Image 1 (cartoon, rainbow, N blue to C red):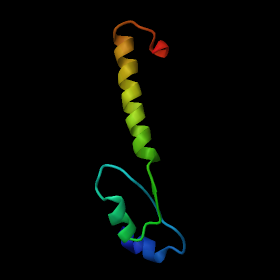
Image 2 (image 1 turned 45 degrees about the vertical axis):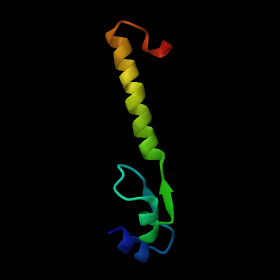
Image 3 (image 1 turned 45 degrees about the horizontal axis):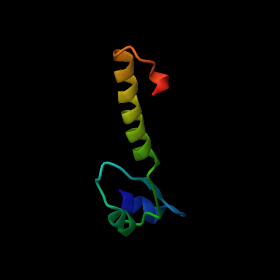
Image 4 (image 1 turned 90 degrees about the vertical axis):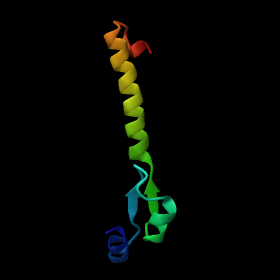
Length: 66
């Protein structure tokens, strides 16, 4: 699907990188021009931050003073 999209779109195709399904080299071979890492980083940070917040609230601490 990515190869077809890259071949038919008259411009660069951007793909979000994540979950390790395809490497950057494999995406490039499919015609992807740009790879975005933003969503994966955002999910990781939300998960880490969320865990710290829930832990603080559960122990009665101020979650914003972490």
